[in-house]
Image (tube, rainbow, N blue to C red; front, side, top):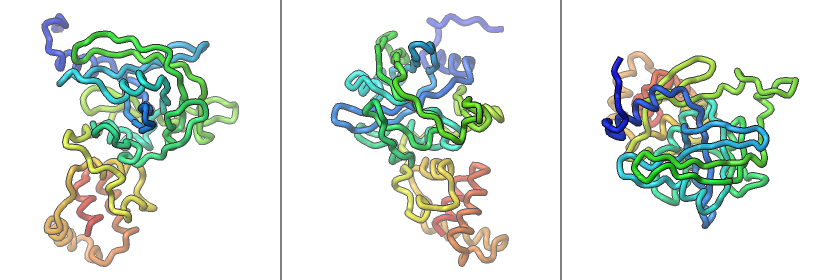
Length: 289
């Protein structure tokens, strides 16, 4: 066993050890607004519930390790002391991951991730309509833990309204944990699905994914592709060229001789199959053919 002094480690190294060892962690999918009413949506895995009466949750938007800047979420809750904490289940995990891309200030992550803004009842920030459980919160306090990159900021939230989807409720009024199908964060690119264990999601691109809002209409409005499928497709910074698409169609035409004349529905089903194996590039080439 190795023994390490945190002071001897770089912030990045220490950060990696902490996140990989203290796992899995629940995810606060935090919706906030700025003083001008612009929405922001971002996930945080430094998060948990700490009290039932009063109902208190705490999440921590840490200062960025690479340049010691703060995230829009922290700036927003400092200005408008309200937040909605949305619970992430497997059905929206890829869209959640896409929303963590560091888009410029003013960009609406709801639109980029293809998620629906649902008006709240007691606070100004929007809820994520696709989330199975949503907590509207007032921010009671913000405790800054340091000034260096990696330092956390404890956002202490009091729940003032909660919303639970009928689809995850048992007949006795309790939450069905299997139906909820919640996911949690681990180290690196790993997540944990409560029902099935660990899986990986590629980290969002530093160059920024094109976003669900930039997808072609026949893809964005597909009756076959799920939100997770759209999240995977939207996490690319550039689409394949027509030359690459034509070569791909030629390569698979022996296996799928009718691919050139196939309907959108058939192509979307086949693209979904490629996505199930994580092959986003092939899925895009098929969808653009």
